[in-house]
Length: 208
Image (cartoon, rainbow, N blue to C red; front, side, top):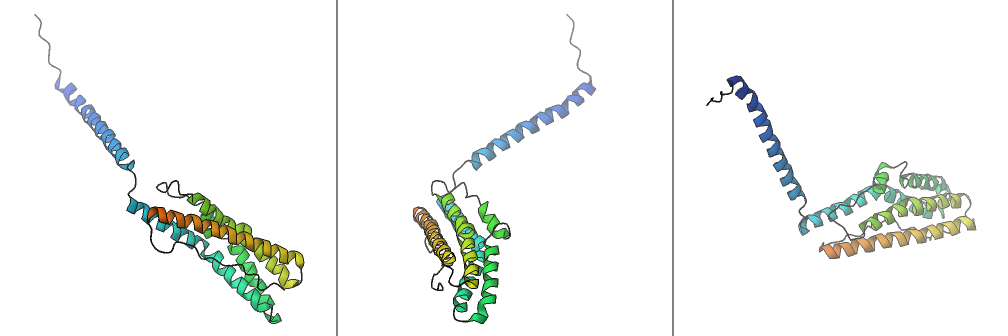
């Protein structure tokens, strides 16, 4: 009976790299599977609280410039009612506030419009809060600042006064809606402390 001839040594050597490659592929697949399993674990409550606090801080930061310039514009407008020399400065501040509350000219506010709520915070309606804040800045405050500019030039303009009152009401409602959502989320997560966003109030005291 014929005996099988052993493989030449060169063949054995040639097959060893393929065996190593197969082992490497298997180990890589195992590592990927472990990563998927670990990554699919739900975030702990403490982690979700940290992410919520971070989210509120980000929203506050994104709105900071729009908010500060709006407060300055409203304050300057109020002063100009009693000081005609202050009208030019008030108009400049209103223009500045309008630009700061425009995502096209304020990168921070643009970041707010594309902000994605962390996936670990579902079912808290936080997307709605973010939307309300974006509307507050771009669709409420900006038109209000345009009305302020009109009123600075035409103090008795009833159409501009009506526009300002309307936008100030919308702004108050959107800010209140956003804060209600944030406060409710904070209660559900057990986050202590103040989480409301204190933004500029579009006072109507300067209307005349």
